[in-house]
Image (cartoon, rainbow, N blue to C red; front, side):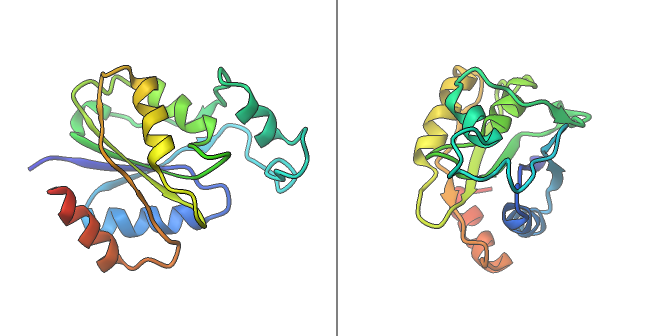
Length: 160
């Protein structure tokens, strides 16, 4: 049986709730991708051009530092990576996470929380970052109010 990790970044708590449901449904380990410097409400204000999140997303090379590390990434075959959608894709801190490990041969499955934007652009961007080292599977936009049963139905369709 393959070992599964659910890694997630949650700026407001919404993605954290979905990640917890997913980890329960898959009997997976859970890892929070936590920035060394936590985001404030002002940092997340997309209407302010100079807010931290806008500055980070405008710089393709930006890699915000992460506090903590997955101790033994080698034990996982499948890694779900969850995040809110920022500017049509995954936040830069997700790129930091992906580049911080040898993910060769692993199945990476993105999931996002967003009102309307899907995960497709993020999945494509993530595959580019991984340069073929891992396979990024088609992900899913999951509503914050999704139940464990709804999440389990999706993962069963993935064949996990």
